[in-house]
Structures are given as C-alpha cells and as structure tokens.
Length: 137
Length: 206
Image (cartoon, rainbow over all chains, first blue to last red; front, side, top):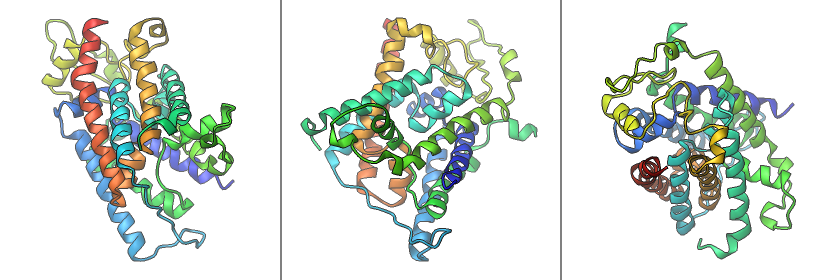
C-alpha cells in the first residue's frame, strides 16, 4: 500500500508528459534546431519550480508527511562520466526522441514499438554495468 | 473540456513537472529520477554476478511503480485527454508542405514542418513518426538505428552519467549539483550532434 502514492504520482507525471508534448519526437528535434521556445520554456519553468521547492524545503526544514527528515543526497561529482555519459545519452535522445520518462509514457499511448526501445535501453544499462570498470569516470 | 483536450501550454505543464520534485520528497522522501528504473529492471530480471546489479532492488521498487504509473498516465493522457479529430483533418501534401497536423502538436512552424518533410516523414498521426517506430522496421536498418541503437545509447548513457533529464536536468540542477549541470550540457551536445548530423544523414542514406 505504501507504493500506491508513487503509482498516483507516476500517473500524474505520465499525463503531464503527454499534455506538455514533451514525449513528442517532433518537439525534441524542433528544440535541438532552436525553432521554438516551447521545450526551453517547459524545461526552464520545471527547473525553476524544482529549485524554489528544494530551497524552501531546505530553508524551512520541511518534514515528510510521516514526519521524517527529508534527505536530499548530493550527486556524486564525476565530471568525465557526466560529460561522456551525457553525450552518449544525448545521441540516443535525438534518435529515439525520448528520454526514459517519455519512453514509458509512449508505451502507454499505444506506440508499442517503444517496448523495443525500452528493451534496448535495459540492455544498454546492463552493458554499462558490465564494462563500468574499464571506462573513464 | 475543449481546452483540456488541446495541448497544454508550457507555462502550465513546466511548473507541474517541477512540482514532481517536492511531491516525491514530501510524500515519499524520494529524489525525482527515472533512469534508475532501467537498472532495477536489470537487477530484477537478468541473472548476473556483477556487484553493480547485486542489491536488493525490491527496496527501490517505488521507482518501478512510478514508471508503471507513467505508462498508465501516458495512456490516459493520449486516449482520454487528447482530441484526435485532427488526425482525419490531416491536410499535408507534397505541394503544400507547410501544413502539419498532429493530435498533440498542431502549431508547428513552417520551417520545422519543412525540415521533417525533407527528412521524408509524411505521416504524423502518432506522438512519434510511425514510419520510423514500428515493429516491421526491426527487419531493416531504420529500426536498428532509431530503436535499437538509440535505445541502447539512452540506457548506456544515462547510467554512465548517473541520471537522465529528470534526475539530472530537473532534480540535479534544482539542488545546484555540478555533476548535473555538466551532464545536462552533455545531453545537449549529444542531442545537437544527433539532430543536426546523425538523424538527417540516416534519413538520407536509409
């Protein structure tokens, strides 16, 4: 039952991804060709909202609904991994027009070919795990 | 209702996406991110001795439930909250290349619509071009590049960078994490190379 809230938040996020057009392959390429402000406005306002939220949570030491202390763990700083991994993901983002969230949402819209994309992404994750030690981080 | 069935403006949906950050923190003490679910699927489904995948994935199952919710949300958003009438009204043709009508995206500029036309994409009924993303294409290089290699890069790259657009660009930049800012720059470098060079080249040769 503890997991129901994550299902509900996931459903909300899936609907927003669809209605915001963020899962559109067309919107992604339009963004990379700087032909519309849409995706920049979307990402920018999402980041601004997230940033203000994190700031307020830290400043007022907001607790969770069950009274726990909220933990915002810092992300490990590995600049080589960030830039190289980031570029590789970016190449895939352009090809598929989808980052992981939209891949799930696209399957929901009935574009079942994205099950193949999800499968390939799982394999990609697996291969990264297998050769992790040989890669610069 | 008509307003709901149209695409929602970015200044409404952007802040709603951003609100996922505090909602997950306050309701579940979890940090927003999706690509980890790919790792949990590996840990749950693929037997391996690799310590990278040897952990109790059930403790992270919230992330998989969240991903399942996104699938359901995508279904509701597309099937029940989208006006599909524009599908039948598709007016594009070879002479007037400027008209592009898609159920969730119908205000495309002439410039953008011409770009897709030049790439050879002429059908726009689905969220993604159905000429590219379909099961038959698994038998030819179009599918190998756009679905298999593209998907592989998404999985490999997000795990290498330790996050995707949600985990790094939204959650990470919200907490002013240097790793996330660098990763986001990487996402855009890769995306620009892909969108300006790889994708047009592939459409030309395939």
